[in-house]
Amino acid sequence: MYQHYRTFQGRKLTDQERVRVLEFQESIHYSPRYSDDNFEYRHVMLPKAMLKVIPSDYFNSEIGTLRILTEDEWRGLGITQSLGWEHYECHAPEPHILLFKRPLNFEAELRAAQQQQIQQAQAQAQSQAPTAQGQIQQTIDSVQQQQVPPAQQQ
Image 1 (cartoon, rainbow, N blue to C red):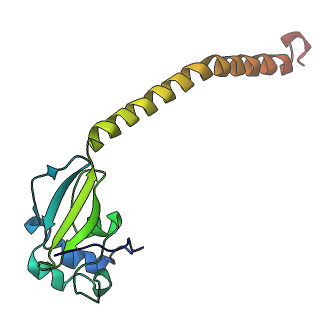
Image 2 (cartoon, rainbow, N blue to C red):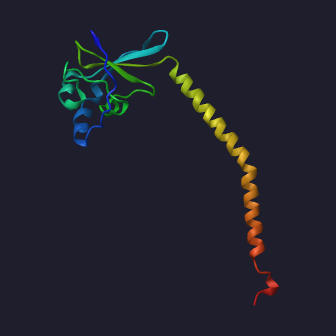
């Protein structure tokens, strides 16, 4: 049975907690991705022994599984994934399995958005270039007007 919980505003691990959980980082297993019409999914299997060193406030005390973790929290546990993944469920019979999802075509949409931002920044820089050049010339003119002509210097 899968459990779904509301998102909890969590906390990052302390340095001491992070050292303990990162000892297990190399043993974390990532499933291949699978999808439906709206999302791509994957599950992440933590080593069972790792659950013993994860702080108790990362757990749902009612059922004993990890609660829904924020991105900072699951990354702090040593889970490494590309952008866009959301922890959305825990597999209650196997509390060391975390389920993740993200919108289908997330990476393509992210690249398109980044490309659009680059183009907007370039267009803005080009439109401001004449203004910047004009400001530079005004500054030069102003400085030249304030200079004392050599003949008047004593």
